[in-house]
Image (cartoon, rainbow, N blue to C red; front, side):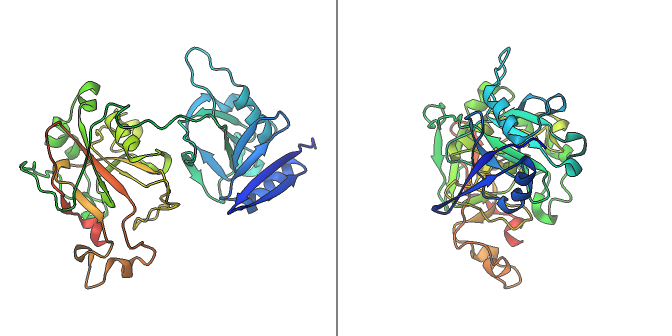
Amino acid sequence: MKQVFVVLALHISSSTILLQAASSQLQHRNEERLIGWGGEWHNQHSHTCDVLPRTELAGEVVLWGASNRVDNASNCCSMCAKFQPQGGAKECNVWVWCGDAVQCGSNFQTCWLKHQVLYQGLDPGAMDQSPKVPWTSGTLPRYTEVPTAELMGMKVHSIAINQASAMSPRIRECGSPAVDGYAHVDPACLEQSLTAREHPSTMGAQLAMEVHIEKHADYDGLAVVWGLTHKQPSAELCADACRRHVPAGPSAGVYGRLPCNAFSWCPVEFTFCFEPDAHTHRGGDCWLKFTEVPEAVQVNQRGNMDQVETIRNRIPYRTRHTKAPAQVQWISGVLLPAGDVPSNGTWGPRAQW
């Protein structure tokens, strides 16, 4: 077996543990103990990669792995570092390698080179991360600077909890999505709704929409882009991603034809943001959503978790959900045409989950 000597520098709290792997086979055995910690990997070619075992990172593919196989993850990292974009292609700053012959099957030793927008201090977007994932992934320190709202040409307003609006909200034609756990949602109804039809049809008009943001709030809506694989370093950049969202069609899922007019962002200072569902929501997660009547949005969480409106059968929210924090962690917002002022909305069914 060809020996591959690497050093993984793992940062656990304030301590640093150096783990030296004598071969790629030993590396895979050690990965079982390293899940979730990550680290820095200085390979034999002097390229530094942040390594995430048992993780499949997301990103735009710049070199397909089906025709690109290497015998270890260190070489995959080197290929990413040395990749030369051609014809306007993007640089490589994310790599994904599959090193488990049994679990990977036909993907064994494939090395996928990718690009995603990376921000220093923000975890990269991942497609999957669990003990069952056979992939090893990594990133190169090729970061994008976080722009301000002013630099993005975006006008941002703050929403007050007791905010009223002189607008007459449109009718919610397709019902409350969360009333039965989203089981009844009819994408065709939403696509034909007045809210969808009146949404700007050009990018210029979308970018002219103004952003209304509320701290300590989570707004309901149908996900047009899942936050589990979509990271942003600020609420403003999450809002800008919503402004720039272009529906991809059915290939993007059942809501792929819907525009984005609402968003929820988990601040990066939190390791996790609470939701009463089966997913793990991490700092930087940016959910792009469509909601009918964004001028009177439905609210899942707001302010103090134990609001009177969240009590169900006389049981407070945090009694039902013992892991919920005292105060909502999320920041949410909506997009509206210039001059429109939203109300503070209404409590949605999800508040009673």
